[in-house]
Length: 346
Ligand code: HEM
Ligand SMILES: *[C@@H]1O[C@H](CO)[C@@H](O)[C@H](O)[C@H]1NC(C)=O
Image (cartoon, rainbow, N blue to C red; front, side, top):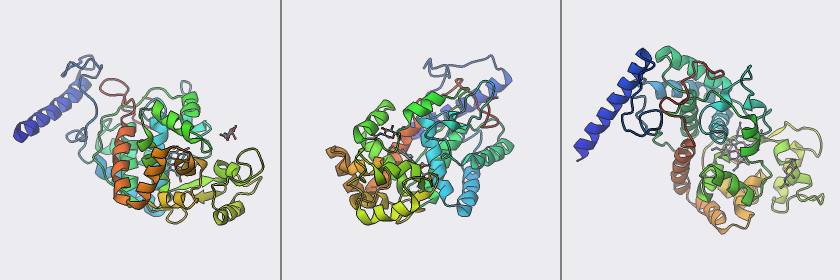
């Protein structure tokens, strides 16, 4: 039985390979191997997608990441976040990478992204190397997913089998970016709603928030908590006092908007479960971090405690939730395209 499954998978890969080769030679010629009627002819995403067409894809991604992250450890965090901000806006389709053009209004200047999202040059370098090795094979959307996984691993976090085969969008959505990415001062019911809208539940919310074990936030993203959490000119009472005091020196009441502070000050470049321990101590940086514990939802509160206690449990769920997030409305088959340059449509 195992033998048969293995063989039929090989056959599927061969068919996929032939189908992409043939479609280059005969652009008008389309297959519908599995009768899925999804416009692409084959189903879903799968880890071996580039096994024949670009077997070295992940190695190329990893070698660029190793260099970039050793030069600047924060880059791992920035790349992980890019995948999140891509997937929450019209699906994991690399829409976030598109620059302004005559037909594109870039997502890069949305409220959540402006002066904040980064890592585009690293994605450009990965894409350039992949275009040399396997021209027009590996999509920018898959590069973002591979970079998110690689960044997690290189920071000391878990590895996961990563389904691939996403295509790139020909559109971007500035309003989608403004409306679908939760703000740092979100309440817990708010966060749950935003995640549910993407097909993600409370477990995914807590696990994926664990990404804030690496990287930084700007003063503008947490100032409200320091000075006027509820319109009463008082700090957020869930914010531990000595931590509050140290944050006020980085983030004054006015000015210094772009001053940065680590999301996990105890181990800012290490992917571990310290983020959850800090939340238990009232030292989560963003309101959206602390409310996972204090927002009066038993389920998320219990999960924060469990992940703080058991790093393995967190890693395991993080991996699963990353795969789930990576499945948000991908373009597959003949939908979308493989961009030659991630910043513009072909
Ligand atoms: C739960 C809702 C979330 C909210 C409200 C949120 C909000 C934020 C904010 C405000 C920042 C700092 C941006 C700045 O000040 O420039 C940030 C950084 C970051 N976020 Fe989130 N985030 C959320 C979920 C996620 C998820 C699901 C991921 C990844 C799967 C993620 C990964 C990151 C990373 C790695 C950073 C640091 C980036 C860097 O240092 O360049 N976040 N987030
Ligand atoms: C979050 O911040 C925005 C902009 O500063 C503000 O309009 C909104 O009322 C805040 N939301 C909460 C829940 O405090």
